Length: 250
Image 1 (cartoon, rainbow, N blue to C red):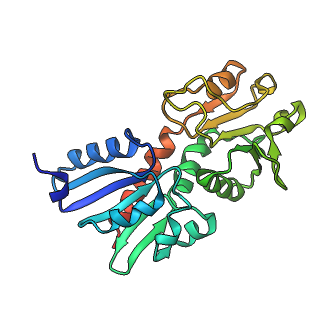
Image 2: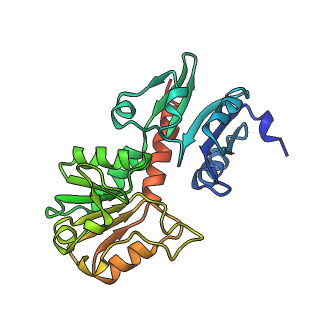
Image 3: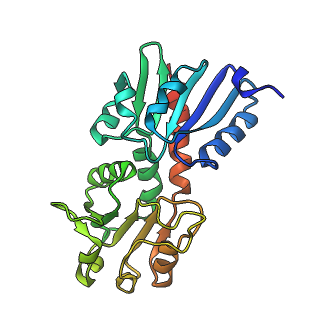
């Protein structure tokens, strides 16, 4: 078995506590299906973003995906950014070029492509749960689609809701609710965003960026009240394909 370090074309995922990752499984299978024996995909599990410098000193790296919590923290290490990534303010894909490291955001493409089949004309207002790097791409896409959206966080900030403020009227009038928090991720599957789920109804669309488990408690409680639901798997698949295209476009 050829060692990863000897592979000619190395790719990987930058994140924290990523012993299992969708990306590694996805790209390893993709390389196998395409017969790309000189390609490998690794998880770079960093406790601090400062450890990124050590990764950069390694050879044969062609591209990286970036996940929680480094989508914003990685930006100072880049030499250039795609216009959309700059506008969003978060990076989830890095391409190694002769000019240096260039950052892109394929989360926006992945989210938009996976969301659109579920949208109905009455889906005009959204709640975005969480304010981390992933939520920035979500906000960008909703604005593009003309869906008014408000962030929800635990602490009060201007122009945002706190969870305590999410009353019957707010939940009923915001018919798209998107979970960008890690609440409910395996193994903590009983956790969920603190919402009054009894106000969620058949006109709602609940979208969870989490894909493991397939149906989070957040989604299950929405579905029980008649809401349409979608997890984050298709978004991941779309963003991964977009990243692959970026890495392979001269």
